[in-house]
Image 1 (cartoon, helix red, strand yellow):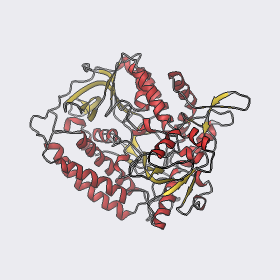
Image 2 (image 1 turned 60 degrees about the horizontal axis):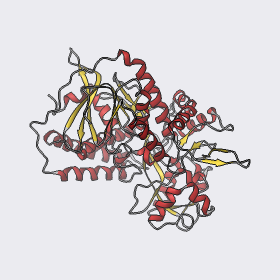
Image 3 (image 1 turned 90 degrees about the horizontal axis):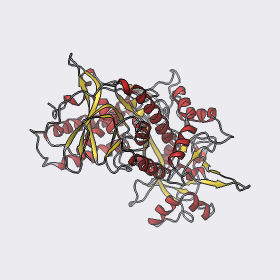
Image 4 (image 1 turned 135 degrees about the horizontal axis):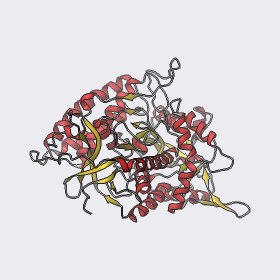
Amino acid sequence: MSMKPFYDVLVIGSGAAGLNFALEVADKASVAVLSKNDLKEGSTYYAQGGIAAVLDEHDSVDSHVEDTLIAGGGLCDEKAVRFIVERGREAINSLINYGVNFSHYKSEDGHADYHLTREGGHSKRRIIHAADATGKELEETLEDRVREKDTIDTFEHHVAIDLVRERLADGSYGRCAGAYALNNKDGRVALIRARAVVLATGGASKAYLYTSNPDGCSGDGIAMAWRSGCRVANMEFSQFHPTCLYHPYARTFLISEAVRGEGGKLVLPDGSRFMDRFDARAELAPRDIVARAIDHEMKRLGVDHVYLDISHKDAGFVTGHFPTIYQQCLDVGIDITKQPIPVVPAAHYTCGGVMTDLNGRTDIEGLYAIGEVAFTGLHGANRMASNSLLECLVLSTAAGRDFLEWLPDLPEPAEVPPWDESWVTDSDEEVVVSHNWDELRRFMWDYVGIVRSTKRLERAKNRIDLLQLEIDEYYGNFRVTSDLLELRNLSVVADLVVRSAMERKESRGLHYTIDYPEPDDKHAPANTVLKPLRRKWRGAQSTSRVG
C-alpha cells in the first residue's frame, strides 16, 4: 500500500486504543495506522481477564470509583476516575455493536445475560469478558472493522523512530507534523506526515527480564514523546502481575486474575495457603500486595515459584471459564483441573506515562496519547485489574471526538526534512545491541523490580548512563534496525523509571523500597512529574539522520 502525501491523523500503535480511535474518526478523516508487527499483535490481543464496567443493577459508578481510588494508593485523580468509569457502559455497548462476542450465562429462569466476573481490588462482579481470551476477541473484532474502512490505511511491520515537529521562524518547534518510520520488510525509512499524531504504543514492561507482555512493549511512545518535549509522570509505578506461568516453554503466558476471582488459591510447595497472612482480602487483594507476598515467600523459602490452585473446582467449570489457560497449561503437561499451576510475578503494566488531559492531549499541539502509553490519573500508584482496557476505550473515544472537533481548523502538516542516512553504514557489531539489551533488562529486574533500595537504584542509574552513551554512539553511526530502535527507547524509559523511583522517598502502591518502607503521611500524596530539559525540546529534527 502506497502512502498518501499526508494524512489527517497518524495513529502509532494498533491495540484497542489505536484501532478504536481510528474507527471513531474514519468516517470524517483519512487515517494511517502504524503497527510494529501484524496489526493484531500487541498487549490487547493477549489480555485474558476482561473489561471493568458498571453493568449490573447491584453495582454502581460510586462503588467502582471507590475501589479504584483505594487500589491507587492515594494518587488517583478522582475527576479522571469518575470520567472514565461513568463512560464504561457506553464503551461496552460500542463494542457489542462492533460485534464483540462477550460471554453469557443462563439464569435459573432461562434468561441469558452477560457473565460478569470479579477480580482483585473489585468489591463487585463487574468484569465483562469473552471467556479467558477477551483481548483476542476484542482485537480481532476491531481489526475486522478497521480493514473494512477505505479511509484507513494500515502499515504493518513499521517501527516508528521519532516524531517530527514543524520548525518555526524563531528556530523553535511547533505542532507535531508526523513521524519517521522504519519499514522492517525492506529496511527503508519513510516520513509520514499528518495534521495530528496519536501515540497508542502501549507500555514498557519489556524493560524487565521477566514480563507477561509481547515483544513489542518497549516504551516507544513514551520515549518518543519525551525526546520531543512532553512531560511524563509516575514512571516508578511498574505493575508486576502476580501470576505468570512458570515454565521454560511458556515464559510470558499470563494466568488471569479471574482465576483467583473464581476461587483459585495461592499455595506454597507444601500446599499451604499464605495470602491471608498478608492481607484480609487474601487472593483478591490488589496486585501490588499479592506480587510482593509471592516475592517474599519465594525469597524466604528459596524457591523459584509458588502455585495457583483451582483444581478443587468442578472440572467442567474450570474448562468452561478458562479454556485458553486450560489448553496452554495442558500443552506443557499441566492439567489445571487436577494440578496446581506454578506461577511467578512478572512485569505487566506501566502505570505512568505521557501526561495528557481527558481528551488525550499532550503538551505538544497536535499530539495525542491514549492507552497504556498515557498518564491520565486513572491508575495512581497501582492499576486495578481490568481498568486498562476500559481506559483504552473511553479515552480513545474522547480523543477521537476531540480531534474531529478541531479537524476543520487543522492546517496541512508542515514540510519537514526527509530521513538522511547517506553517511551511515550497516553495522558489523550487532552483538553490541544484543549484549546491551540483555544487560539492561537484567539489571532492571535485579535493581528496579518488586523490591527496591536507594543503593540498587543508584547502581541501575550508573549502568543506564553508560549504556546510553554506547547506544547514542551506535545510533549515530549505523543504519537503524528495529532491535536498535527498541533498545534506544528502552534505555530512555529505564532512565525515567529509575529517576522517578529515586525521587519518591516513600513506599506507595507498586513502588516499594526497603529504605522508606512506609508511605509518607506527613505530606499530601503527590505524582512524580519529570520535565524534559529545554535543550531536549527539539523533536526528531535534532537527530543526526535529518538534514
